[in-house]
Every structure is written in C-alpha cells, then in structure tokens.
Image (cartoon, rainbow, N blue to C red; front, top):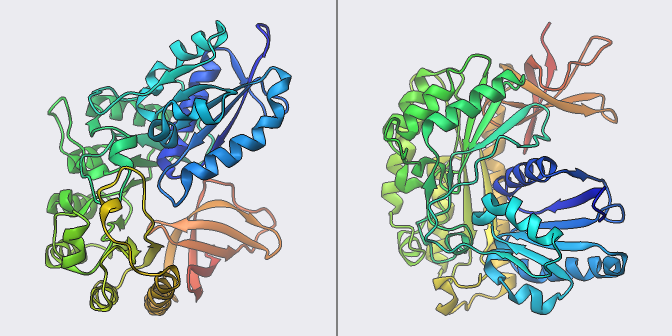
Length: 442
C-alpha cells in the first residue's frame, strides 16, 4: 500500500446487518481515498468483516486469516472488523501477529481516525467500544452494492440478553438513530432511484426515537410514504416489542410489504424461560393473532427456531412441532443449538448428542416443508407483483421476489427480459417447497 495508491479488499460474512455495515465501511474507505479491488493479491489493505453467530465462528476467522498469511510478505496490512473482532479483541493480535487493526462494529464511526493511524505506521490499531457507547454509525458515504434494494440501519445493538446469543456482547447496547435522520436517508435513497428500502436492526422494532418524534410503527408508515418508494421491509422483529400498531400501519400503507419475520426460537414455554426470551408460547401466539387479523391482505409469517437447546426434552420439542401447526409459517429457518462464547447458556448442561439434534432438526424441516407446500398451493392462479432480481438463463426464467418475500421464478414471453429492479405482474402456475413458479401477465 503506497501513499499514491491506497487499495483495499473486503470480505464479508454473516447477516444482512453485516452486509450493510460493509457498504458503509466501503463508502468510508473510498471517502478516505482508498480504491476497492477484486482480489486479495491486488489490495494493500485486506479487511475481514466477521460474524460470531454461528458455531465455531472464531475458528473460521483464524482459519481464513491463516490463508491470508501467505500474503503478509508483500507489504500488505490486515484488519479484522465486526463481531468476532469485538468478541476476541486483542487476542487476535496474539494469534495472528500480522493483523494490524481490530475493530468492533460499534467503533466503525472511528474508522477515519483508525485508518490514519494505520497509515502512520502503527501496527496494532484497535477500536473496541464497550456497551457504554451511545453512538451509531451514520455516514453519507455508503457504497450501495445492491442495484435494486437499499438498506437503512435504524437501531444498533441489543439489550435482550437471550441465554444463547452473543450479539449483546459484540454489538453493544441498543441505540437508535433519530427518525429525521432515517427519513433524510430514505429520501436520498429514493432520489438515487431505489424503490425498495429495508429497515434493519438486531431488534428492529425495539426502535426508540431519541428525538421522541415517532414510534417504530409511525416511522414505518412515514418511510412508506416517501415519494418513489414502492416497497418497505423491516428485519428482524423481536416478539417482546411487537405491538398492534405495527400491524395497523402495515394494513393502512400499501408500500409496507406484507411479511413479518418474528423469531420464536422454541414452542415450549419452559425452554423459552430457560432461553431468557421473557415471553410464553401463549404470549407469542397472541402477537401472531394480531398479524393474522390484518383486514386488507394476508401477511406472510416467517420465524427462526433453535432445536436441542440445553435441557430440551422430547415433550419440549413436540411443543415446537405443534407450534408449526398452530401458526402455519410461510418459512422457518431452523438451527441446531451450539454454544457461543460469553453467553449464559455456556453453564447449562448440553446433554443432547449432535445426531439427536440433527434428527430433531430434520423432523422440524420435514413438517415445515409440508406446511409450506399447502400454503403455497393457495397461491396457484393468483396474480402477484414481483420485483425482478435477475435472470436464470439455464431455465429461461426471470428471478424475483414477491411482497411477501417469497422467491418467484417466471417465464417472459417478450424478446427483451424485464430490467433488474422493475416490477412485473406474474400469474402463479406451480409451486415448489421454497418458491413459486409463474408466467408474466401482459
């Protein structure tokens, strides 16, 4: 990396929050005079944006860093950022001495300062804010890579402290952006030509306007009325902060997509208590009843479920299976429990064998597959609006997504395929377990 040519390569892992963080990091680097390149070999600065949610995440980080090691003799500098950076801290320097910068996501606002120190020759630059920070990472220099969907983080961090989750320790405490700032960014996005916005947060509906002007539901509705914005999504909601006015505004504002992702994690009240989710099965089902009571359109429901949490019995797991039957989710993202560093569940006895966890997960997925088949069959013959996301030349199909966030693959009768980001009316003719098949309607 020379003074005349500052280049960087950034690799991102993990959730959509991480992906959008990378967009903002890239924008900040470019504003500081760096140029993004496509390969590690061409970069002077290599950044690895990490995620700590999945099993053995930190081991995967060090394995990847070991692959980078072969490049260290070329005068390159290495940076580990994101959740594993916050989790492991300065231990990263000890295990990978060629790393020059370690920064957690709560410290990204300090990136220009950290980059300047790196360029000045410092070999151990850190940004590791604790849970006391009130700052959010706001920047006008976001480098948006998705050509049709733009993301806005409205709340960072987490105060929920679920027993299995590392996020409160890696992302800091909950801190919301002012609603005026969010709306200003939404208008900029619309002026750039984007028609879909997704509001992001670890617990997006835990949003609390520091300006005291708008509730989460009011912010949703206001973003949905920004001229030029055709679709608004939000993810991920926490059941503890899900309120009836969210459903009401979704019913009233057509641009708010008819989809809610509401992670339940378990259908057993006993396990929910052990997970420190602070709600019961019945309490959760009441929120589902609000969503199902929407008057103007059906709102699709998706969720996350963990199987094999410490202490989960066969009866507890059966409660989860019956919850699938009670709710009838449009999709379920199922995971086997794995212990994460610093979490309260570490002291719990994880007595269920991995093969038993895998067997339970398969039962869950098989049952959900049948439920999805029946739900999707109800869409046959319907006409849905699809945003085009790409083309599958091998199948001669356009790839897109409905307002309910369902993948839709459809055929196109004209010579020229519709543009990415355009909206098409599609008649559903067939269903697959995880997608809909259709044909364009002239």
